[in-house]
Image 1 (cartoon, helix red, strand yellow):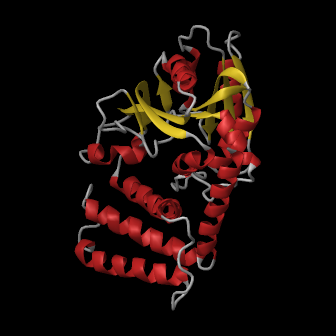
Image 2 (cartoon, helix red, strand yellow):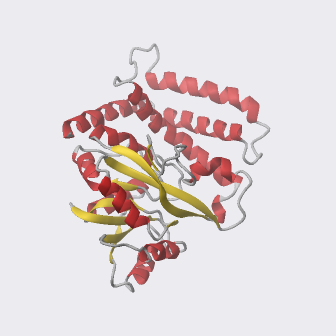
Image 3 (cartoon, helix red, strand yellow):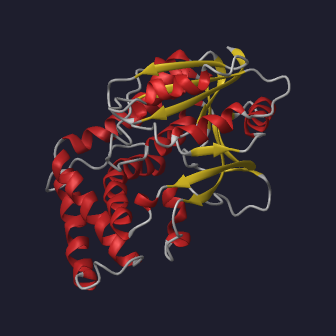
Length: 338
């Protein structure tokens, strides 16, 4: 695989916010590092593709590609970018991420010097279109913003990193997709706020012999549109987070035990789990029923996430247990690939 960086910008109706993102990529300062920009139009209904072409075609010194992915969902868009990328390091830059001018250079150097790194994350700071909400700081990680490590070292190993500006080794994804991998999460889809595809890739990395690291010196700005800076949006975000927990908890459970959860329960495993979650929902509702409009209340958000998690398990029913068998298959495929 050729040495260099493929910057993959996944877009859904991004024309109104893409200009700053692409200009920050165009203005990258690199020495001896080849890179390309790949814009993936993920089922947009605006003029995202043409808007991107209008900006990039004016810069003859940078290779670029604009491709379409009709299947809605961030995971599908990322896979499309991976499929057309020609370099070993894939830098996934969201359409509202503004990378510091040395981001590509530093990402390349870090990945080159540490071949064990399969995924590398950076530090995102928020840029607000309108006034910063009083509650934002305590929930900033939910928005892929803020320091991801408590270590005093700039470079540290973590179990997972958020997806804004993260870098993945293409060789890792080659092994992953060759194993028949299909994400158990669609990740963000259109205006839905389900996420977790980033976390899934982090969990899978160790199965295939790679580590997840964080470099605090990798800096970017994450633009916070005013439509995301309200209590209603944060509650919607936690609905998505609750649904995502069904899948990420399955990975976490299999981290602790290589065995599929006990199938000899009196009730089917999915139903036993649903009842447990439903009880949590009922118990917490008594505490929050009169606080649902209290912006920034952590108990309200926990209730919302738990309720969404319970409903997702109910919707899956018998398919819930199949998640664990699928994860076991990925574990075995990873061992076989090493």
